[in-house]
Amino acid sequence: MKPIWIVDDDQSIRFVLEKALLRENLPTRSFTNPRDVLTAVANGESPQVLVSDIRMPGGSGLDLLSRVKAAHPGLPVIIMTAYSDLDSAVSAFQGGAFEYLPKPFDLPKAVELIRRAVEESQREEVSEERMTETPEMLGQAPAMQDVFRAIGRLSQSNVTVMITGESGSGKELVARALHKHSPRANGPFIAINTAAIPKDLLESELFGHERGAFTGAQTMRRGRFEQADGGTLFLDEIGDMPFDLQTRLLRVLSDGHFYRVGGHGAVKTNVRVIAATHQNLEQRVKDGGFREDLFHRLNVIRLRLPALRERREDVPMLTRHFLQQSAHQLGVEPKRISDAALVWLGNFAFPGNVRQLENVCHWLTVMAPAQVIEPKDLPPEVGVQQSGAVEQVQMSLPATALLTDAPQVVSPAEEHLPAANLAATAAPVQQIQGEGWELGLDADAAALLATDRTDVWEQLMRRFESRLILAALAATRGRRIEAAQKLGIGRNTITRKIQELGLE
Image 1 (tube, one colour):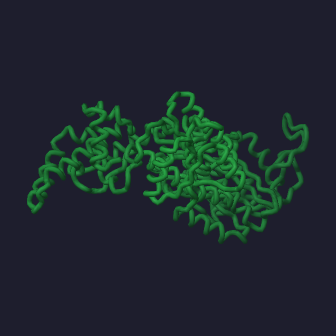
Image 2 (cartoon, rainbow, N blue to C red):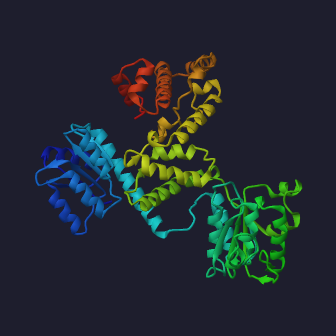
Image 3 (cartoon, rainbow, N blue to C red):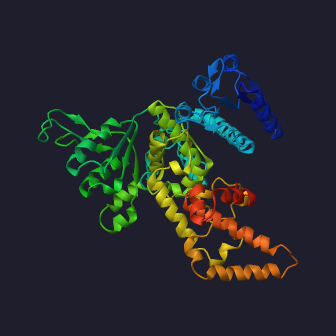
């Protein structure tokens, strides 16, 4: 691992941080001014994390931040300052700082912050490696691996493919991948959403028209089938195609011939058709809304694309990809996202699938106030729905879950906690209002008292206090002062209890 660079003209600050980081087996290198740092960067050196004071003789930490970030955009930079004013904080974050650390700081918390920055730096390195590969589709979930295998098997085939899946799940991406890895890759790829075009224009859009075929047809126009000759035509939302046009489509698929609107001569085309739908076409056939013979003609090979909620392990990778993509499109510094926010997103149902996640990332790139996205920065529709989902699942737990070690749903406020503490999840307030939790306490107490233990009081109180504090943190989305107010205890008390109970 590369060293952590500490830039501060105060020798005592450098000494304290060096010793504390070395105890954590984190290598360091210290500088007394920004000039030496820039010289090292110019010589091709770079740190794992940069920790810099904001005001130093011979240069400003904010100037250093901007120049180092220009050379190493993904480098986490922590800005320290004894001048905790608004302008400094805003300037630090606008310059792409990982975090803003006011002096004097609590040393263990500073070390923990630097460790988080190191982890973020290592994640960014892996993410950049993945981004350079630029796969047209992303996914490590087993369901997506099945899709990739199917694309591979179809790579040398011209067979017609039907892609099914919910709206926003990426059906066009699959169609493009099928085209790219097929013998027709050098031909055109033409996509059309049959549901987005009015019925009276769709026929002309697909098959073209002759001059004078209808009012406004002043010139001959080639349709999508002609444009896709020698390549692939992607028909999205095929289930919404009007019934009379289905007959014409069936004829093209059968012999490759069609007539332009108003035309009298058959046009020959060589097109591979890939269709997609979010509907149940078998049911549409039964209901008389879709031709059965066309269904069988299209349904030669069927690929089902999973919804995003079926591939939650892909959410972190997709989120980072879309944040990078959004930043590139807007010409801004890519934002980073915390593990807590990623866990929150991973628990969200995403009814709009990958498209909704992409939109969320666009929103975050523009609207998130800090360079590092936390759960509180997520858009309201994600936060509100997720909160409701967590409460609903928690309320369905048995009453004894309050004091037992059964697996629990992780609430957003707990997402930053170590894995060892995740079992100590909070029960909702609605559960505590009844007598069920008291019966659970009776049962747990009786079980513990039946053993040789002599710390029953301490064990039960620790578990009770842990869950009570976590419930308050869940209700306030991790805001400690507000949680303390709701519990009726002091700010220092909740901080001390969080430390004593290992909830930090």
